[in-house]
Image 1 (cartoon, rainbow, N blue to C red):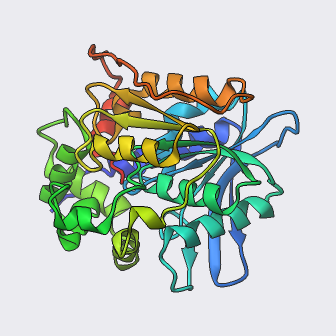
Image 2 (tube, one colour; image 1 turned 180 degrees about the vertical axis):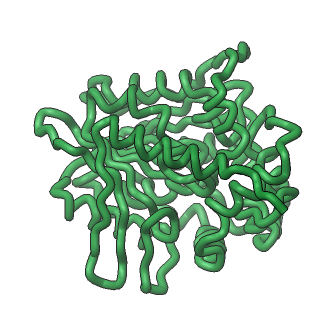
Length: 333
C-alpha cells in the first residue's frame, strides 16, 4: 500500500533550515558520564546580549514548540534551545529520570558552552525542569517563565480526581500516542479548537516521527513527576517569575497555575490567556510572545509584583498554512 508523503518529516526539515538561517547551529555535547545532550546554540555569541534558555515539553520537538518565537527573541538574546534527555538527539545511559537530573544535565550543558548566567522559559514538562534549575542554581538563573507547567501538582491530585485522566498508564498512552485515535485524543486535551478531519496517514506519520523513540524512558519520566510528589517538598524559588496559563487547559488545569503563584509568592505574577488550552503558545502565539517580551526585557530592579491576569483576546485571526499544520500535530506536556 502506498504511504502518504511524510509531511511531518518535511516540516521538520524546514524547521532545521529555519533555525540555521536564524543564526543558530546544532551541537551535540558529550557530558562524559554516558550522557549526550543536543542543543541549538548561537552561531556567534554576543557578550552584550543576555542569555535565554528555551526548554521544551513533551510532544513535537523543541524547534516546533519555539520556532515562532525566534524572530521575537533573537535580536535581544543569545538563544539556547536544548533537547531534554530522551527527546531529539539527547540520550543517557544513567538510570535517573527526575526533573532534577534533567536540570542538572541542562546546567552542565550550558556550562560546557560557557554560559554562567541566563533567564529561562519552560513549557509544560520543560517548566518542571526549568523550575528545578532555578531552585538548584539560583546564582545562574536570573528570570523564569513557566508556561502551563504543573510544578505544584501532588500525587494525591491523581487519586482525588483533580485531573480528567488519573491513571498514569492512561496518561502515558495519551501523551505518547501510538495510534491515530490516541493522537486525536491528545489534540482534544491540548487545544480548545482542535482541527478535525485529519487523515489517519498524516497522524500515523506524526507518530512515526515524534512518538516512537524512547517510549519506555518517557513513561519513566512521567512516573517520576508524580511519585511521592507533595507541595511541602517543592522548594520555593526566589527569581522574578512569570506564569503563563491557558484559561481552558485540560492537561494541567488553571488552578495549578494559581497554586504555583501562591507557592512562589510575591516574586511571581500570572497571566491567564483566554480561549486557550494547554498549547497556549501555539493557539495564541502573539499574546504569548507579548507577555514574554514584556517580562524578559523589563527593568528587573523590582521583584515584588501583585497577582494579575490578562484579559486575552477572544478574536481568532486566520492562521497561515504552516500555523494550521502545527495546530494539527503539536502537543506538550
